[in-house]
Length: 239
Image (cartoon, rainbow, N blue to C red):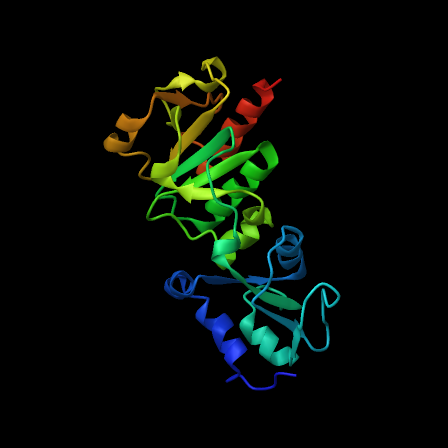
């Protein structure tokens, strides 16, 4: 059982709190049995697996899980209630690509909760991919992982400039009303951060602009809500 905070496995999990370290090492950490189990269900194999020595979880599914003293697990966890299991996975094992018929291309969506929620929407209303520009929140960060609720392990991701057309820019107003927009078998919805929106050069690369009609006094929709509605609309039209 691990009883020292200086243990190398615990040090690794702490290092992975940093996006820079996650990118440098090609690893990320998952907390909690629901998220870890979703990764295992998707076929990912953990590099490391730590379990609370007094409240172990997923013991039958983990190869060589290492028990950790409860107080040390509590120090590692960012959850309101300390996780019973923490596992480290390789980023390269996550699904990649833009082969799905629908997609979301996110331009500088900084909030990890929104990125995670959009991954979950792509999982719910897909098949769909999510393409991320530089400046987007890291989908393997703790907040994004929690918001995605396991969808990161099923939804392929890609770079923003890899997203195939036709590209449909979602804007708060002035675009073709989404229900009236002609959509083919494929579409990639392009969304920007809530304050900045999409810059002119990105809008110029899109084939069409669309807006989601709103009947109330709100100025705009949350980016995660807008992306979810767009994917739902596209899916609703499929045979």
